[in-house]
Image 1 (cartoon, one colour):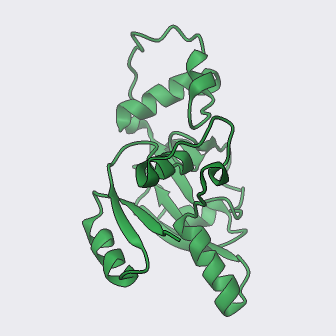
Image 2 (cartoon, helix red, strand yellow):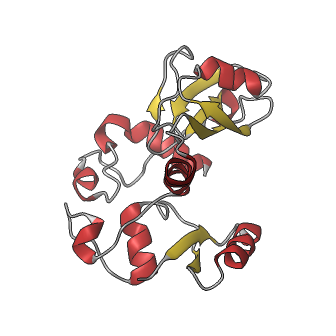
Length: 198
């Protein structure tokens, strides 16, 4: 009965455009900018005040969450009869000549996405499918986009920052309570570097 569209408040033009388009059909909620604000459980709490129980699903608190890409894919399927054959992919990072948002057919090699962004302006040090916190490291650009890919992040060596994690003893207990289920023990050093860069 209630539809809420959440947009981080550092995107005022998007908020205004969505409010104009939604009218009285949906509430547009300007959300605080913080990680992991876009995560399902955090969105539910921000929009409704309800907390999804540990291990539970949004349905447990009477909610369903859909991201923008899913909503667009539903529209394409229902109104146009078009299956999911393409995806908007954010190709970003200082290693790129022109970071861009690209509408890429499923199966597009990562190398073609990089080429569409003007190639590398400096050699990449690390490349992730996804973002810096939850992305999966790639060892080649020969892999191709799949339905779940929404970003390709190409880090340059100049973005690398090291700092001692003064209060961390690397026990891994944070992994057990992380709402995002981040693989802390496996990638603690990488996560610290990316947090420092934010």
